[in-house]
Every structure is written in C-alpha cells, then in structure tokens.
Amino acid sequence: MHLVPATLLLTLLTTVLAAKKYFTLDLAYSRQSPDGFAMDMMLANGQIDYPIVVNRGDTVVVKVVNNLNVSTAIHWHGMYQKGTQWMDGAAMVTQCPIKPGAHYIYEFNVGDQVGTYWWHAHFKSQYINGLRGPFIIKDPRDPYIRQYDYDLTVTLTDFFHNGSDYLLNNIFYNVNNTNADEPVPESGLIGGVGRYNCSVTQSHNKNCKNNNPLKQYTVTPGKRYRIRLINTAAQAHYTFSIDGHNLTVIEQDGVYTDPTVVNEISIHSAQRYSFILTANAAASNYWIRAVMFDTWTPTPTNLNGLNMDVRAILSYSNVKAATPTSAKQTSVIPLVPYLLGELNGFKQTDLPDFWSYNQTLYMSFAYGPPFYNYPTATISIDSDTVNFRDSQYVMPMPGMDRPTLQSLIQNPSAPRLPDTINPISVHNNEWVFMMIQNSDAMEHPFHIHGHSFYILGAGNLRHQSVQGNGTLPRRDTIQVPACVGGRGGTGEQGCLKGFVNLAIKFDNPGAWLFHCHVEWHMSAGLVMTFINNGDGAPGALPDLRKNPHAVPPEAFQTC
Image 1 (cartoon, rainbow, N blue to C red):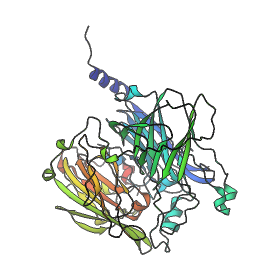
Image 2 (cartoon, rainbow, N blue to C red):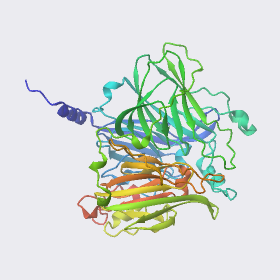
Image 3 (cartoon, rainbow, N blue to C red):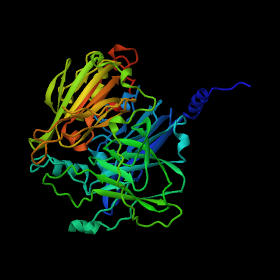
Image 4 (cartoon, one colour):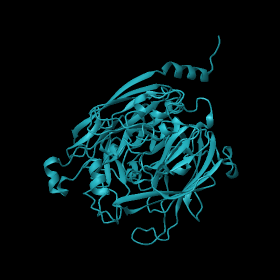
C-alpha cells in the first residue's frame, strides 16, 4: 500500500473543486422597507445583500447588467486581481463605468485567496443605495473546518432614507454645511433588517411601518457556527456582541488568524471577521448587539431619530422565539485588531528592518470645511522619493479622461498621469514602510486595493505603541487610532495624533487605490493611487501599443 501525503490530497482536492462559476448581477431599482420605511433601492437581482459563494481556485465570471438610469461599476473588495488588474472595478481607475442599459463581464481567478470578502459599487457612493453583497470563498484546506458545523454570514450597515445623489448634493455638498458634517443615517441594519421609529418625522408616516420585525438567527443547542461578519456601512463603526456568548475569532479580511477568544468586536466599514460561536448557553433568546460609535455629535447635526443601538435576535431552536430579556456582558473581552496575528504568519523579524525598506512614506491627512461649497479631504506625503502637501484626489472624469490603468498600460515605461490622482510610484516587489498619522478625533479605516499589508504597530504619538511579540496581523483594511487628549468642541486642539505603521510588499503591478473607507471622506478626496508599472518585467502588465486586445475593449472604450 502506498500512502498519499495529506498535503498532496488537499492540493488534489482543491484542483478538483476549482471550476469556472457563472453569476449574473441584474442591477435595478426595487422598493424595499428593511427598517420599516419604504423606499426605492438599487439592488442586484432584487435582493438585499445578494451573496456570491465560490471555492478556492475558482474562476469567477459575473455578468453585470445595468438596468439603472445611472452608470456604475462593481469592485471586488479584497481581491488581488493578479493578472486581471482591469477587473478591480474602481470606476475611472481600472475601467470605464458601465453605462445604463449596458452590461460588463467581470472574469477573474481567486487563486489561493480564501475567506470573507464583499462586492460593492465603486462610483459616486452608490453602494449606500444597496449595491453590495457578500463575496465568500470557501476553503477545502480550512484549518478550522473541523471546529464548526455550520457557516453563515451576517452583514452590518447604516441605512439612509435618501439616495447617495441626494445625500451628496443636498446634504454633504450643501453651502450651509460649513463644518463638513457627514450625512447621518436613519437606522442600522443587521442581516439587511433594522427598525426605525416612524414617529420621528411626520413625512415618514405614510411610507413607514413601526416595530419592524428584527432579524432572527436560530441555532441548535451544542452546534458550532462560523459567523462571517461584514461591515458594509458608509460610515458606521460598530461594536458587535452576542449576549451570553464568547466569540472565537479565526479570520480577518480573508486571512486566517490565531484563534482569539473575545466577547466584543469593534468593526469598521469594509472590515470582515469570522468567529466561531458555540451554542452552549442556556436555551433561550439572546440579543445580538451592534452599537454604533457616535461620530456625529457634538457637531450640530440632526440625528434623524437614529437609534445607535442596533439589534437582532439569536434564538435557540428548542425554545419559543420571543423578545430577549438578556443583558450585555459586564466583563468585556475586546478584540485588539493591532494584535490579531496571522495564523502561521510572519513575525517582525521576517520583514525588512527599518533601514532596509525600499521606500518610507509618512502620510497625514486633513478633513475639514468646504472649499467652493465642497468638503475637502486632503493627503500629505513625506518620503525620500515623493512629497506633496494637502492634495485632494480628483477622480478622472468619464467622457473627458482615461481611467488611470489605461494611461499606465498605454505607455508603461512613461505613463502620463495627472497629479490630481495623488500618484505614488513603487517598484515591483519592493517593500514599503508607511506611517499614517491621524489628527482627527475619530478613527479612520484605510483600505488598499490589490494587496494586503502587515500591521507593525499603532497608538498615539509620544505614547508607546500597541505592538505584539507574536505573528503580525495582515489584512486589507485597518483603522488609524483617533487623536486623543485634546480640547475644544471636537476634542482636537492639542491632541495626541493617532498612528498606525504598515509594511506593504508591492508585488502586483497596476494602478491601485489607497483610501479612507468612510464613504463621505473618499468622496471628498481622501484617496491616493499606488502606481506599479512592473519595471518592464515580461508579462507584468499588458502593453496596449503592442497588444491592443490584451484587455477587454469595453473596459476602456466606453468612457
């Protein structure tokens, strides 16, 4: 008898399971009332949080049919898109927007990426209107697969009773919005369901139903559940917990983590966690809590009747479903994201020492009062190769400009790129050290396209940073700590700046955004673009002068 090594069996199994999977996202308007208030939403296939589920190694083919009356584009959040850079889905960065009545086919291989991701519109803040959903990659090699019986996904978001066009043009870009206050949601949703108090405004009553039923999740006593938690909000930063239960975190942003037992998870927009919940409490009904951080007061905004304590229900299958009477845990075991190490990942000693990085970037940003009636968010960069001050990102204009990636691959050796995209050139396969400083009294989640980064430390300047001795966290979205200890109405005068230190290996040629994932801040310009032309390596990027058919024509020819 010849025994086959387990690793070979797993490789063979993955190869057998890998396939080409086809999906259609039919984008259209649909009248929905997820919190009791009826309004027209932009949805895929008429469903809130339409999921796409594939396996490790699959090739994914998604036909996006635009039946809306506006152009759009779909981003595959967290996907590296190696070899298919034009499939990233960031409008006017890697493709032209999909025009009304047109369709676009996204095709890419997920490679060895596994875990919890999401898809969402990446044009004019449209995902706020409902163009978003889970993107899950199952893994036959999952090291935790024997530790759970069921796999389910829970989304968190903020819900607005007006569309993104109205929120941007009438609220955010309003001449009277002199403090650049962000729009305030009317409610929060768990699993696409929430509850709004219809009595707050008289105008809502005709379209509103009070006491909207909350989302209920039923569990079987003794069973174990992998719960994939995704924050798809425009801004809401949640603290998530389930009364009477611990949560064993095993994944962040598509990266397996060391198993970490907590009972409370702080999760920002665009972040994802997987945790294992064991249904071993007394059979009953328990509150699932997602409490928003108040990032709007003390600014003089109308909170629209927003209840920041968003809830759903966890019900044991052997008891009658009922409104829970459970209490929140008094002893909190919080998740510390800066210490959540990658399972079998790199330690600090595995990365370059500080003096060996190919580039060192020091980034700061400002968000503040409007300029010509538009709120402004700007970035400043100090480095040995590039420097700019208070620079606001401006998206290339459809119908006038080329997408950034098109400009890059029209002439990879000497691309003509406007300064308004805040470009930072990096060499292929180089390591970059990046410190982000935050002088704002709220945390800001920053996301990178086409890559993940290692978190080396975080904290507040002149104070010791949070830095562990184990493996380093690796992910694609991380919050920069708030500026603390300040004075004034916003608490920012004389405060100690927050910071996070990152290590990024740029091994994926292309044009990749790096931006704050508070949607309003991105809209205001808190964005920059990493440019990697592949340094002339064969096949790193297609050269459209030599091979004009290397990229699907609709990617660049419909602007």
